[in-house]
Picture 1 (spheres, rainbow, N blue to C red):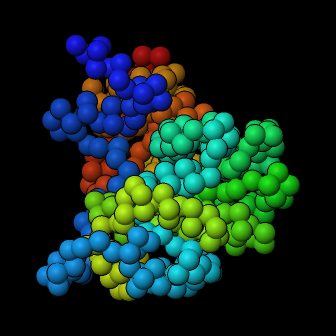
Picture 2: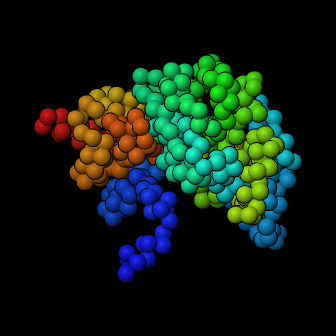
Picture 3: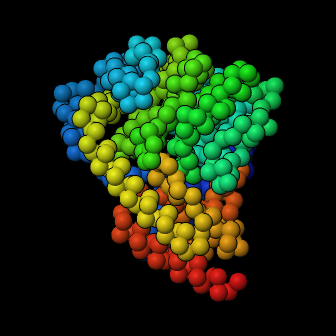
Length: 393
Ligand SMILES: Cc1ncc(COP(=O)(O)O)c(C=O)c1O
């Protein structure tokens, strides 16, 4: 019977692999006393004033759809925010669409630009949803592997090697999930002539932009010639601690945003109304909360990275997001083996690096969006684990 039903599932859907992150966490959820450094979401609850704006939205009877692109008031607020925080200029009227999380923005962006067989370069190790989103849009994901020697940044040489005649776009995510890598203005400028020469579009997922610790975040869209070929994706999930509100946005040149809006109209209609009212409040008065959470992440980052290096798991200092990506190569285990044994023996959940694509094997992703007490206990357990296995080796 199962086989009969299976035959109705499309080839594309049946060939999609389940997310390596989820698979692992289903296992962890069945165990007691597990410390999770696994999931990529803030441990903070959404600041109270934002929740209140959500309640107020319902009390005021805002229970209907908004405009397809989202509340004009919110688009205006995003336009000012992007200008003040990142020196970007996007029209609220025609260049911003509110989406159901950054996730929907990624899906829409690919569907709006990909024709069958177009290649899209994905910087890896990268967020697990990118390559499947390209495939679902009919495109071909092509890995651009980065490495710890380059602090997981994109270099000219690496980019040159993967561009072909069929390349349509490249997807960047800085600060990066899972490596925490960031790219400076100079480093980005070093590759933009290649992007122009090959007439590529850029999808820039900047959902962790606010969580940049040692330098000011610089969007590739600011570089001369890049604005007209960049689709910028962001949202409220990470920096504003609003993952469950499901609100993101996409901005870019009017023609592309127009195409995105058409697909959004037919598939989603609009992002949740309550969430849009919450986001309005987050942008208007959420700065102090954002800074408070950011200070805490930075402190945890410093603690965790130092601890990894001290226990012999070499770990570069991530410039942003809330992930550390230490190498586990010194243990002689694969990332799957390491993660599975660590979970079974010490009850600490981390994500094996290979699930993030090329260049991820030999690493584990550890989210430090968890309390400092849990991090300290996790460090103690990982240290015990590494020592025990080193003795055996
Ligand atoms: C790089 C990156 N982009 C997008 C998303 C999805 O964000 P949202 O919750 O806004 O859909 C995530 C979530 O983990 C992410 O890490």
